[in-house]
Image 1 (cartoon, helix red, strand yellow):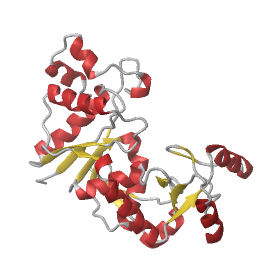
Image 2 (cartoon, one colour):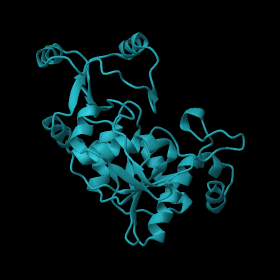
Image 3 (cartoon, helix red, strand yellow):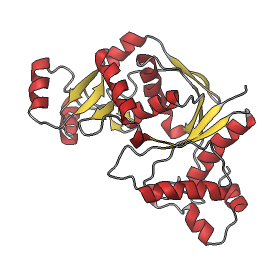
Length: 279
């Protein structure tokens, strides 16, 4: 295979750590080995948590590590029109609906229904608002109620039929459109979600191999369905294993994992940190 296009797509919500370095190196090495291109994308749609200073820091850390990427960097916040267009296409296909439930509402509905399967991001949404009438939906929306737009997974399944994606490690993986339920694809205040934005970005940037941690394997089922609904090409995938510290704990921002910047300040050389970021 030649000409593979990969990408590293961090969110500027903190400094990069060794887990990020591993993921970036993993993607860059595939592109280099396949004679392709490696892209950098900044996933900054959540303006409440993203900070410009961390965007600058991401570029600084990657450059210090010796990782090279294509000169043009796509920042999601600059391309909201692309996501609005994709959302309109989903609306026109009748596969999204407004959901007015709060987190408490969802938990209460699940409790009434008894035990429920759990998806990647917690309990699977039970579909409380799926069957609201058009009149009631319109009344709530014009009344100023907060809402999210959810993907009607059952309708999407019926439209797309059998789907699969190819993973470099796992081979062909059959898609289950119902796996994560009716996921959120946009909110009233943000016209996209992670799921919708990355699918649109990967298509527009010509990414041919999506590299990501195996913790996002479940999300790939959602993304393959969205690709079908939006008539977008289906890239290949490479879900890599996660990187853990000496105590067997996964590197994560929320756990305040030691950052690349901190290692640099301690006197480590780029080659040493690159080696630390290998499995």
